[in-house]
Length: 140
Image (cartoon, rainbow, N blue to C red; front, side, top):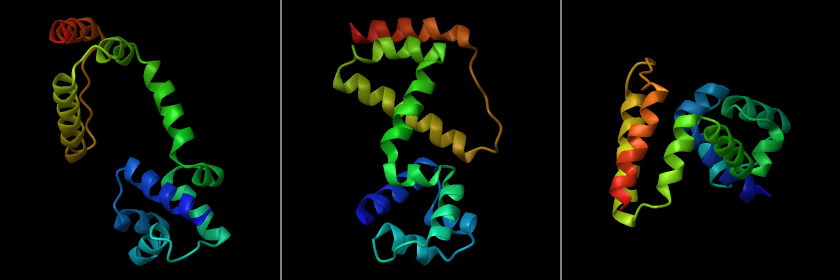
């Protein structure tokens, strides 16, 4: 159980984009406590579990279920977006090199966005068919 919890804490922290120091600040605990939890050197108390869940923006049961249920929920929410749904139809047709290029571009875009202020620049949904056509040509 501790291994699952430790793995879950780390994956949820990374998914949220927080360092151990960031998470510790959100919980008002020392950074070393987060490290000990993630490395199975400490077991959290019930009150720590509640603080941890709040800091990670999940429920206490989600801490124990790990990332899997959160991943399913995230995928379901993403697939409701028309742009993502349009792109997803073409992703399965990409070869390894093309997939690597797309993932690298997406990674660069998300990292660039995280470095910016909280300003968000979105492309209109009308661009989805154009991207789909480009991906379709790349997959051929």
